[in-house]
Image (cartoon, rainbow, N blue to C red; front, side, top):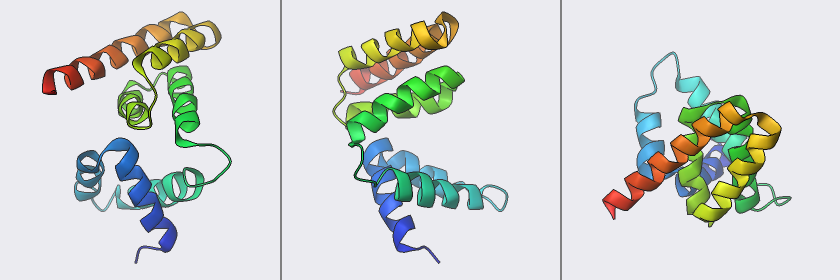
Length: 127
């Protein structure tokens, strides 16, 4: 049974990443992945993303840097969209990725720029 923290996390997760993506992730969860989806929704989104210490824009900037450092393009793609949903501009995303290039390495930043450009193209072609 979902908790209040899960429900808050689900709302934030949908707002940041988009309801279609989140609902698909939850719908496609199976016996192997269902508990991971619950954990991510409740603790990542319901516990951390709802804290008052940082606003969503700042959390998005951090995620862009962290995911670049970890070289996680699939998650980065989601969080580029999330950053845009949280009011981060394309120029700010570019600056965050340039900063990451210096501290995380050029190869990781090259991949992150490719991912961000792909998201921008998808958004531009849909609009």
